[in-house]
Each structure stands twice: as C-alpha cells, then as structure tokens.
Image (tube, rainbow, N blue to C red):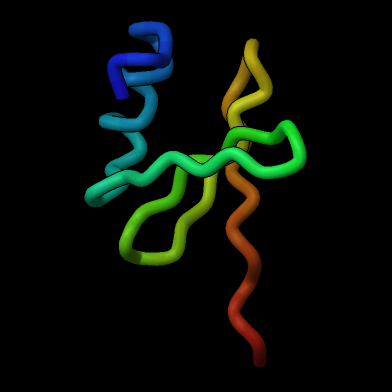
Length: 55
C-alpha cells in the first residue's frame, strides 16, 4: 500500500479492508479484500464498488 498517498492508506485502514490486494485493469486501479469488498481508486478519491450479492 506504500505506493498510494497516505490519505489512501488511512482510508483503507478505516474501511477495515482485510488483507487488501491491488489490481490494475483497463487503466483502473481497484483494491479488494478477502471478504469480496472492492474499492476503486480514481486518483483523487476512493469509491466502493462492491457488487451486491445475488438474491
């Protein structure tokens, strides 16, 4: 996580992501954890994009 600004590192900790992993695909940077939560890093903000569970 050290490649991200400190505010991003703090936000990830505050969100409680467990064992976060970074992925880059199609120019988008996402951070996901073992519970399935997914956060999109836009460069200036973080947005949770976790898909809803199927009903």
